[in-house]
Image (cartoon, rainbow, N blue to C red; front, side, top):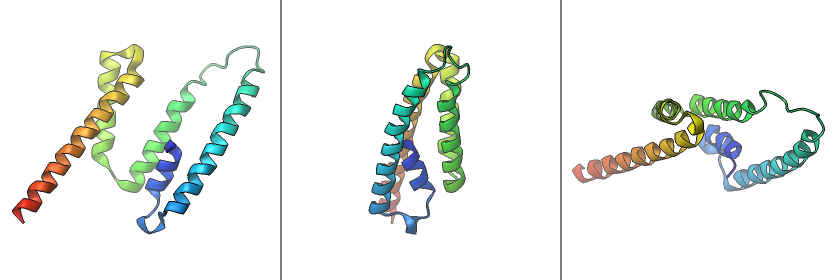
Length: 127
């Protein structure tokens, strides 16, 4: 699933989510992603010198998607885990901080999920 499809689907109210809508969004995003990539390759070959600051665009995209998902779901723990992951990665491995932060964040999300699942089982056992 493309990040944008997930972000849009996550921001929709529960009653508006459906498999056909998700599939249509996925197909549309795949088409514009591949098509846009091909157009970008063609246009990217045109300028004589590299464009400074363009590498930040992807980082900015993920920041906007994160903020949009946070506004719709109010998931403060995930946002804090992401911030902690980036901070630790920038301190420990500044040369490859994005990769380290991603690995750390996935690990923290898995740990959070395992703890939540264990709490659910314990609460069900008490009831």
